[in-house]
Amino acid sequence: MKSMRGFLKYYKPYIGIMAVDLLCAAFSSVCELVFPVLVREITNRASAGTLVMSIILQVGGIYVLLRLLDTFANYYMSDIGHVMGARLETDMRRDLFSHLQKLSFRFYDNAKVGQIMSRITHDLFDITEFSHHCPEEFFVSGIKILGSFIILLRVNVPLTLILFLLLPLMLLSRILLRGRMKKAFQYQREQVGELNAAIEDNLLGIRVVKSFANEGYEQDRFEEGNRRFLGAKRRAYKYMALFHGGIRFFDGVMYIAVIVIGALFLLGGKITPGDFLAYLLYIQMLIASLRRLVEFTEQFQRGTTGIERFMEIMNEPVAIADRAGAGPLVNVQGKVQFDNVSFRYAEGDKTVLSHIDLTVRPGENVALVGPSGGGKTTLCNLIPRFYEAVEGRILIDGQDVRDVTVESLRRNIGVVQQDVYLFSGTVGENILYGRPEADRSAVEEAARAAGAHEFIEALPNGYDTYVGERGVKLSGGQKQRIAIARLFLKNPPILILDEATSALDNESERLVQASLDRLAKGRTTFTIAHRLTTVRNADRILVLTDKGIEESGTHASLLEKDGIYAKLHKLYT
Image 1 (cartoon, rainbow, N blue to C red):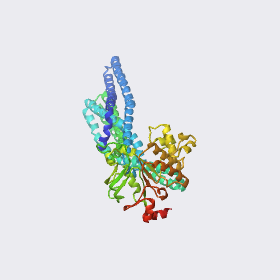
Image 2: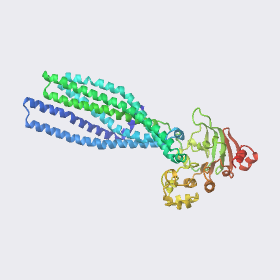
Image 3: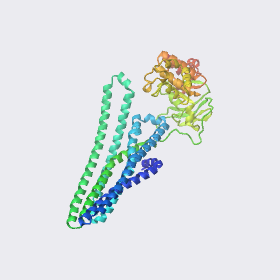
Image 4: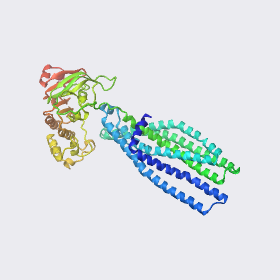
């Protein structure tokens, strides 16, 4: 019910369209309800010998008018009604995507992209069909069932009551299967997401797969997931078969009841031939409505399952958001302070950082070195609030980062990572991502500053060269310099360089390091490195271990101290 309440708000902008859609559904239902009445009238008059041409023309005219209304009503439902469902889907996809942008790294640490993609595509499509057809189907079926009951009561009360006493048995059997069908569809959706996640994982890592000649292993993994998906569908189809088999059984029971009991009443003179014919037509309509309503249960289950999965993400709390009254971070000088900062990834996990106190002056280049797992990257990730400190505070120019808007905070911080991500598109578009409103001359200027202009110009289409999925058509050094150009264009006062050259060959490292040195000039810079040769010229070097900041000083002073840094230097040089 909580999920449904969250879903129903999406109808609000389209309440007028929905009202007209239901009105059209009512017109269509009335047209079908009137037809057996007209047939009964003509049959009874023909049996009594009172049928005349004027009556035939009058009945025909009424039915033609009703059919015109029915045609218009069905056109509206098929066109405008379906478009309303598509608009509703668009609104939901927009909100889902927007919410995904707000979720922290903590959410993505545990999420599978394939599962998320399944919810954005398959689930929302089923919700679209549900959103349009659900109100319509229940409304139409309700009118037909209630209308048939009232009209049949006026024809023959005992026969009508006998027939309608069979309905609770049909509904009870449907209710018993509903829970199992719902679980089956939920499991099927989960397996769709798992299969998508496995395929995505394989395709993104296809070069690793081929380099290890593990195509057979991957095929076996896929087959296992594919079989689980088949099993999930078989389970769902099993309950669907029981569902539809039950419907057909009760259809037959109701038809037999009408024919046998109705024939007995006709034989005893309790109903006229016209009444009997009308009964047959109404029962046919009633059974068709019930069948349509019951068969809609499959779509209903898909829709409600999709809504639950949609709301599951929408209800995921935004862990990192603007505080009430948060203002923009402006005129940044670049002073960064850690005041008694502690952090762990989840409740009950080991503390990664414990009571860190650190002050970095504006424009200072601070290098973070130490063993893996010491918290170097984690420390830097707390500055732009990719994660939230569990204790203490982080300040920029004396302002707590939680008191400024997240957007303005991250606009003033640039990050260069070891694993550069380039979006599918051109070289120019990837650089422009640093400041989307910039012009082409600014893009080229940023590329020159990053030492990337020459190799970009040498590409087949220059800045308009397509980089391929994740930039696979470029070398590691080229991708890194494009990422640096992107930051030159952004022009942030604070930089975080996270192992930016560790995956490069010596020549590429030399070129990229020169670009990084130009980028860091005049900016507050945090450099994370294992290659100590890249941090010799840092203003200050911090040795961070699981015990905290154990050493601090320049390259020369730390070597002279002959501590952890000196040992690392001997090990890696």
